[in-house]
Image (cartoon, rainbow, N blue to C red):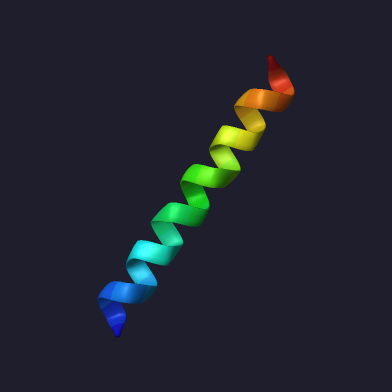
Length: 25
């Protein structure tokens, strides 16, 4: 369960950073 939460957290961080890169470019 904890592993699942960590994976989802990391994935959401990647998505957010990708969005920021797209917006700033």
